[in-house]
Length: 223
Length: 100
Image (cartoon, rainbow over all chains, first blue to last red; front, side, top):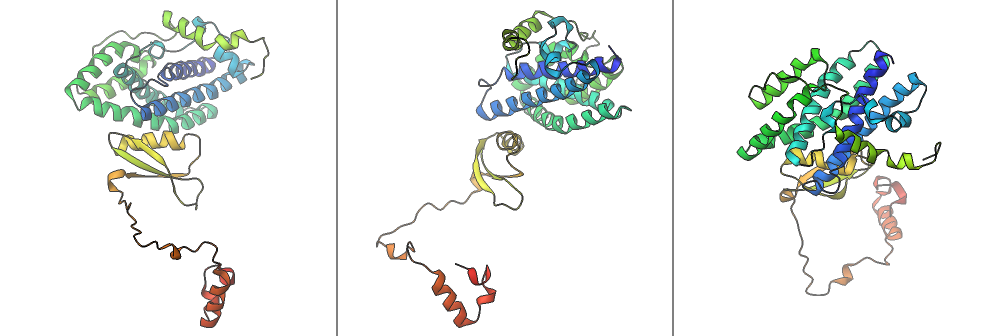
């Protein structure tokens, strides 16, 4: 597999799995408006995944659906940050914010890519991600505005920090650290990143559920 | 806070009331309105107005049965045209001579 395909699949898998995880809040988010907004953001992420899978599929001679659903869990290239099952709102928001911040740093490098398809898709994605970031940043403002919110956010960020570092390649991690530390006004521990592509049991569970319908249908079924 | 949301379906069309969103502040309201009333490309623009900023009129007393003010079944088109002809203002009317 080329470096380009590997990159496309890494980001596509991040977006698909995070979209799936975030969609687990549909119907049970803290209040109606947030439910709709968060579900809509989840759908956007899955749309990004599809566009990225299509680029990778053209290179591999396959289809986006096959890449999204027909690989084994261990073949997914996503960062462990996105696969964690976190049905608790402060952690969900912390993960959302950490991911969007890392994603912005990653997209900035991709937008400058020499490969016009990669630069193009990154520019398109960034236009939607801007609203995701706005949403995440507003929640961070609110959490930071009270002692209770601040301590919940701190606790969640401490737990997720090694995972967040794992979203980015080694040479970009300092940028994430600088952004997050400046926003929270504190230093984060020098810690080993949880590397991309190493999966826990939670991904296998998610995969079972995500691919259930497709696996139950005869091969070649049209949707 | 409650924000009333008005949406415009196509450029040039009037904004129509779409519904409302509950949000802690205007920034959140903008995000929520965008996702609720714009995520399917069903709007080209939205207006948000804090409900507290809306002036409401909800009382229309009718103590003397003023239904003679209603215009149902009363065709004004011809009379208006004749009146405009008399006054020499036919060309100035909105929609020209077809004004109803």
